[in-house]
Structure formats: structure tokens, C-alpha cells
Image (cartoon, rainbow, N blue to C red; front, side, top):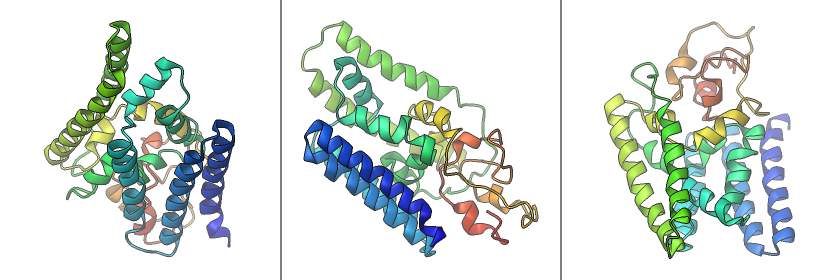
Length: 272
């Protein structure tokens, strides 16, 4: 039963958050929301343990689709980073602020960049593209993510400082336009660099939140040095260019790991 400890921990974390928010906010939506996400992720991890080929993709579609279609299009919530800034400026701990606190600020202390691998609705689409493994080494363009991060903050701050009316409507339109821009940029970069995850590496502003906490992540890929034969296959299949054979937290691109488990699935010696 040891192999089911990780899905049990993940389920317990999300269920605890669901119950706490339900009781403190007196809103049963939070019980449904975080229970649904927790169950989806737990089921996916269990399917992976049982060696089901499309386990991660199922979780991506369940969680990413739910957040994009139900929370975004139907409920009208801006779950992009602009929505987080919006609620932060209004001083309201709701929707996007709760989502970011759980999934992207404090959650990564437990599951690292797991959000990127299992729940991101942008990556959900990009992972359908043909370049699942990078065709060339990572480029030194990571600074762009800090520009987009700052731009999102400036955009929302400008709305408040200018006294713009109907900010909620503007936020919803920003969500729609933002998704179009993200998907367009992500697809263009994927084909330009022959790398599905180029957007995640260079453009995505959310990674500015994810990376610091991911350094201390409890759940992470580790290498059994006694089994490893240094074949290099794990490095070739890693979509994020992480050196998973190095167990140090300072390993190359260590905070970029999205726990996709491609390295684990492809290791010929079960060293990961």
C-alpha cells in the first residue's frame, strides 16, 4: 500500500481545504470545488500507479476543462493572474485569490509544479501538439515571464487607479482575450521552437509564483543512484529539461519539474 501514500496525501490536502473553506466561508461551493479537483487528481495518480497510459491527460481534461469552461465561461470568473490581482486589490479572499493561494503559492510546498502538469487549462491544449519532447536545449528567455507578470499587475492596478467602471465586466473580457492570447502565443512558440512547453518555460507569468515554493516541494522526483546507468533517456524525454538524476534541490532546472512522470515511465532500470 506504500505506493498509494502520495495520492492519499493529495486527496487529504484538497479535502481539508474543501471542508475548511466551506465552514469558514459558509459556502458549499468550496466543498464541491476543491473536492472535485482533489478527487480528479487522486484518480489520475492512481491510474498512473496502475500504469494507465493517459492518466495525466485525463486529469488535465477533468480539472483544466472544469476551470476553463465552468468557472471561466459559465461562472464568469477570471482565473488568470489578472483575476488574482483584481480580488487582491478589492481585499476579498474569494475565487481567484483562494485558487492561487492553494494551487500556486502554498500548494507547491507539497506538490511543486504539479499544477502545470495536471491542471493548467493552457497546457491542457498545448500538450496535444506534436512536440512533446524539446527538439533543442532550453533558451535563455525565462526573463519574459517576469515581464508578463509585471504587465498583468500594471494592467489591473491601472484599472483601479483610473477609476474604471464595470471592472468585473472588464475582468471577464480580459479572461476571454487573455486565453486567446495565451493559446495563440503558446501554439506559435511550440511550432517555432518545436517544444510544446515553450510557453510554460518563457512566457507564463504564473510560474513566478510557482517556482520559489517548488524549491522546497515535498513531492519530487528522486533518482536511485545504485540503479541508474546514466543512459540519459530521462533527460531526453523531459519536456521541461530537468536533470532528474541529480537529487539536489539545486539541480538544473529543478523548480521547472511538472511531475509529468515521463522520466519515470521511460527509465529502463526503474531508478526514478
